[in-house]
Each structure stands twice: as structure tokens, then as C-alpha cells.
Length: 206
Image (tube, rainbow, N blue to C red):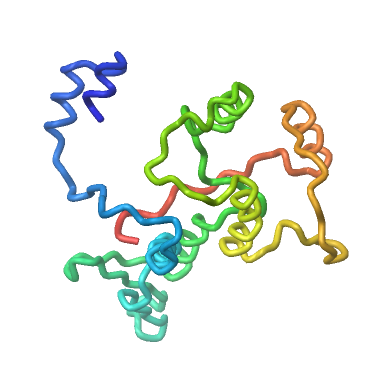
């Protein structure tokens, strides 16, 4: 990766030497064998890893106010190493946890550069999107893939985007609006344009 960034003129040897001298915390990228798109069992295990709970209840200990010297309830969370712990006041612990819950309709994952919506749209208009080589060729059509988006949203957010929130009837897509000014006018009319920011995320122990 560093060689690619250097060849693109984004960094130089000084930056590379500096980064290589950083203390390595142990984080790494796990690369295993490629999962075939039709291998349902391995795909399910991978998705289960993605949606795992951010904290472990087994490593969490609740100390009620009646057992605390200052009558303040606390939560003690033990790290994976079994030695490091972090103590929170009970309400502070809840406040830290809810910062990870997005507001309704809020997007917390954004894509930049090659994977941004603009770049993907430009490739689609130029009809060059399919020229990008894939690791695995699939016989599933693009139409079949497009049908999965609502099912995936329903699995993640437990809400069907094609069900009308007022009458619970089945909705269908009429058209896609891509003009920024029109999108802004619609969201402002629905009072959804203002972005509500979260507090800083919780520390490494949690």
C-alpha cells in the first residue's frame, strides 16, 4: 500500500519511514481463502461476524448503588486480555453506548474516492463499470443483485424500505432522484436536511 501511495505521488520516503517506525498495536488484516458467492454456509458465518455485538455481556459487571460506597451505580468492563478494566458510572456507560446508535435515516458509513457515489455514477455513465476485473465471476445477473438491496436493509435495520410507513402497503420504485438541489429541497421540506452529530465514540476498551 505504501509503495502504491508513493508511486501516485501522495507520500514520500520520509513519510514511509515515519509510518514504519510507529508502534504496532497488533491490528492486522485477516486474509483467508476467497469465499465463493454461492457458499451460503461461509457467507453466513462472515455476516455473523459483521453484525456481532460491539460489547460482550460476559465481560460486563454491574455494581448497583446499594453496593457502592458513594451510592453510585457503576459498570465495570473487562478487556479481552482479562487484566485491563474500565469503570463507568452507569448512566455514563449508557450515554457512551447510545452514541453508536444512528438517528433514523442517518448514514454513518461513507465512501470516498473510487467507491464514492459520484465515481460510481461516472463509471456507469461511461459504461466502464463492468470493465473492472472481479476476483470471482458470477452467473447471477445484475437484476438479481439489485433485488437484494431491500432485503439487506431489512436484515440490518429491521425495517422494510418498501413498506409504506403510513398504510403499511407495498411500495415500488418509480424513479431515482440524483439532482443535489432537488434532493436538498425534498429533505428540507421533510425536516430531514439538518445533520445531527453524535458525541465522540466510546474508548478502546468498549
